[in-house]
Amino acid sequence: MDVVIGIDVGTGSARAGVFTLDGHKLGAGTTPTRTWQPQADYMQQSSADIWRAVCDSVAIAMPMARDMAGEALDVRGIGFDATCSLVVVGPDGKSLSIDADGAHGQDVILWMDHRAMDEAAEINAGHHDVLRYVGGMISPEMETPKLLWLKRHLPDVFARATLFLDLPDYLTWRATGASSRSRCSTVCKWTYLAHEQRWDDTYFRAIGLGVLADEGYRRIGTDIKPLGERVGRGLDARAAGELGLPAGTPVAVSAIDAHAGGIGVMGGVTGDEPPAFDRRLALIGGTSSCHMAVSPLPRFVSGVWGPYRDAMLPGMWLNEAGQSATGSLIDFIITTHPATPALRQQAEKEGRTIYQVLNDLLAASGGDGVAGALTKDLHVMPDFHGNRSPHADPTLRGMICGLGLHATAHDLALLYLATLQALAYGTRDIVAVLNRQGYAIDTIIATGGGTKNPVFIREHANATGCRILLPEEPDSVLLGSAVLGAVAAGAYLSIRAAMAAMTRIRAEIRPCASSADFHDRKFRVFSQMYADQVHYRQIMNK
Image (cartoon, rainbow, N blue to C red):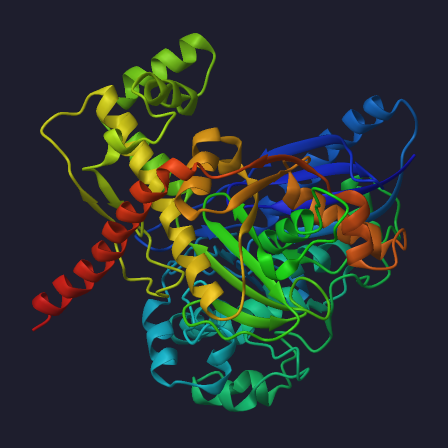
């Protein structure tokens, strides 16, 4: 049986999925990865640990897939995606530590690391023309602020590095030995101008990274390929042995994890009509969330990354919004509450998750309806890790209004619901700014961890007023990478053709009309909380 493999490296694990050429998953494996946090806002990983987890996940997935298929498998191609973390490679392919104290093996600055806040602020103060293509503001999650931090704080590491790689490109380099880069990562996170097929010399010299321009950008990419193409000559002998796959197996140009998720869902249809992309938003939820919209025209949206040419679908411009903390925020709210230990014990005893227990508590309180009586006086601003969109302010912080002098399981359930609603209002905020710039979004295609939670989905539908489509394949990020692997293998002539053949919709959730007024009022409070925080800062900074 012909199959393709999708490999996804997220914040806390590596996953592998084996798919048929019509998009059915036969087997999957997951292996955790390690993250170090030596100090506040510093988050580091190990490329060796990540690659080990990739190989272990493939080793889990392949036997499962063979058993499911009941016959031998011919792996036609492989697609990789990963978080937009920075990997530093030294001479002879050895890792270089990015740890301030030189901790061995920690050569990856995680995407959510905020050590480069000062560098990002300095870059933004220059109002460089290239910033128009990142929503007007560079984020400390992007790579040029991190490179500038390295140059200033670890100059020896910066000088000795032979390659600076986005993690998706590290994976294809590790698999093939070819140092080509993906337009997806270089355009979205490195300021490469794909529509002009060039780096901006003026920008790099102005921000203090002129050495990269002087050396012809050899360390950050001179061979930059669009999605859908192959990398090098396929798996090299070393990687093939480690993965247990044939040498020469085609490897696709890589994608950022959220963008792979967009590919895995955007082509799904509920009828015979082709997808109207201007009306669709892909919501890829996990530790953070990404919101992806594509257009045939470039749309400049303040506080929203992009427009990025060819970053997800060839020939289309991508706008990428997002929330810096979604799954991580929900977990934080739950784990820090005094009622959690008892609820966890109950959940374990009943063989359920704590989310299911909380959802049942809400249903028993009437939370399966309009929910107005439950969170009318409890409001959350969810920017605990800063705001990615539409305010593009990593210094923003979370706020909770309406706490009482009690902390029961019922109180936790209400705070949990208010947090889910706050995240949904964040999505509503993003939809509003996109629609003001020419989109007509009324449909959200959602995938990722949070979308397995029916309350999360219900609140997003009710809060945004959009219908929610759920894909048949819940691991849509893995499927998106498999789509790229299928195109690289020549099984399909284009990404759009592969999307049409490999993605399907399983469910549609429509908003409850009777809840619209309640959510309109809650959204006004949500917007006012942002304005209030800005006002508080103005008072304190006088």
